[in-house]
Image (cartoon, rainbow, N blue to C red):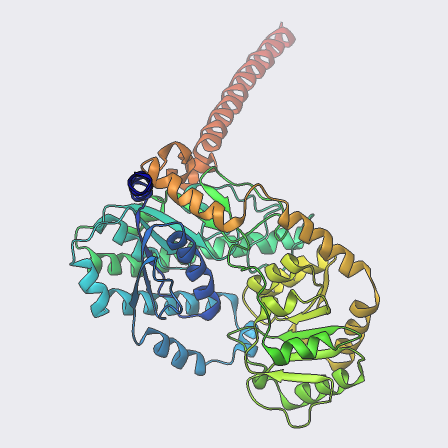
Length: 518
């Protein structure tokens, strides 16, 4: 009898479980390890919550638990094409380029990725499969044409922003972005009170973004939409049809910024609890009586591509330190000092979690910056391109790091900054305070991401969260038509008053003349 009751209860639980299981399509063709980490962790969180997920990306999933309802659709060849393109570029020289040229180049790269995605046989097969999904999740990164798949599968559109609020994502949901104090992603200035010069520069970046999207990117994306769905909506319509935006940001990392109701901060959701280190790393760190420094330039930048004098100078500085150093380096360094350990790959978050960690030398990528706040480790940021200078400036402004741009790099400056960060406790204190703010949240960020995706599906796209501003054209949003009308009315009044005064003055003068004649 007890066994029958147990089976009945389990059956009921399974029925309840299945009622709340949604079908979710994650379309993430961006061929970049850092972006893939973000997208994978989101999809894994949804699969772990019991949803049936389909992950479309250039990479195959690893170690997927058998109980997950998880399907991989690997876009073969997309990563290879992207890596071949990267080989033609010197990333360490990118920041010397004209900002307009960089924006246009980025748009062209992403257009190529969109084209490779929509023409891929596996994507065509999925499009023709007549499958049904409850939600489509895509990344906000000049991939607007892919939003057309939400129309094809008749599902809700959810956006993932790899950064915080930006000029790319704000207009999609009508989020305010006052240029006077909301710095552009590439402005490089994150002081609380922007100077006149920086506000002017900020305005130029925002205008460049708007003009590039309106007059260059939109036409390219519209052509892709027609290839996906001949009678599909325009990119302008698709861009403002998002039900939810998940932001990889948090006020412990970003400055306080305005957010409309359907924008949710989940910054740090990609970070897993610390795992045991490989034996060699564990022993190296455990036996470091004066602490450990970790040095990594991220996944796209390669330390081996640094100039030889720079590499040799860095090793010379490391050799003077009493701390041990782990350097993520892509090849062997035979002339390294005894206190330096070279590793081609490192479990970065697990290294930062070690109690002997003293300092993180980083390129200033957002994932690395978030991990350092999560674990409470100060940084020396050496940014190269993209949002790295902005992230580095923010770390310095918030007191948990120092920064100097790669193009300003000197061995003397590098050594003096290391000594300052290692010997002055204020940086460690500042980052530990930031870490407290990060962890003091009502729910874990990955749980929040799952909750809000489910919320959007439960409430049929949650239209009650959308603000009217997302559909307003710029002259209505900024009240230009109202101000123009007021200007016309005011000008008309001035003109009428001028005529009346002129007429009155003329009559008065005529009256004075008559009196003089008499």
